[in-house]
Image (cartoon, rainbow, N blue to C red):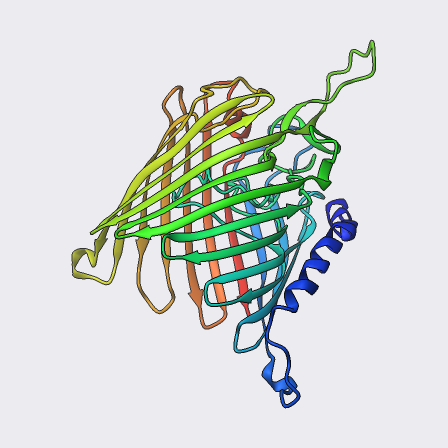
Length: 426
């Protein structure tokens, strides 16, 4: 069994805190009356089973990596119970993937295992959950609660489940969410045989923390969100363990001339302030995200902002076309390979989204990203279409190019690939 999955199961001690909180919260829900029967509890099962095929156009840059073809199989069922007319519910969403080459990508996770009680002006959510924040298309700066599941894809969209106690308060002046986050999840990285990684493999066994509590540190977050006319506003403060590890070459034995072949991880404590704004003005959708992060190692600002303009029914058809443009900025500027920093320090993104509005929910997203400081770019195509009532096919293409050897994107320049997946939803 994959080591990351074993570590997840070994976190049962941390889950005891959540189990106690569930027991307390259950006392707040409507008591079961003598005349209520099991039929009052609604139960649903859904989910998906998928097969995925990647093909890398070029030979691997490093000899230990897989060559061209990579196949994987995943399953993600969802079990849902609700009672008290929907005021109380439990959701359980496990996930597991088996990969043909990369042992690190063969992994499992509990995406969600949570109890939710909803009242008129407040909601309590307890357990393992996923919480997404953000409005922009090409980078989600403000999305900080869940750890990135890096072996799934390198775009950062896939997240690991996070243990939490979340109290949401609904007011006329906005929604306030309070988060207690007991337990930290380490980021997953591609293994030695995996593609889409740098020259050094990240060592999952060589991890250290600034906090003496390590993975047991109790993180905290406070978020406010509100809609005012055409504007959707959000702001938050997060205090806890940085979701991004500082990576550095693992130390070698004294007097050894062997060059390090792996990277060690260091997770610092951080305070992060974030804002996100989205304005819907006719056919224009304006988006902006910004963060300020402070750690013992660095302080910096970062922004992501842009727009999407929609053409409805282009050429008198059922097609909708959206044109996108966003800019990324990071106050740390350019960083050398191996140094801590952001790839998106001064980058421009343009793209187009085509929605066919047909019975098959066909969509295509195309995007081009360019580093304005040197000659580096990325190109993507994401297309999906439903077949019948239960099958969805997805086709992705990603091209990566850089002529600067010190740029991290340069180490991925041989990893251009196409990916085809077919998922059965039940």
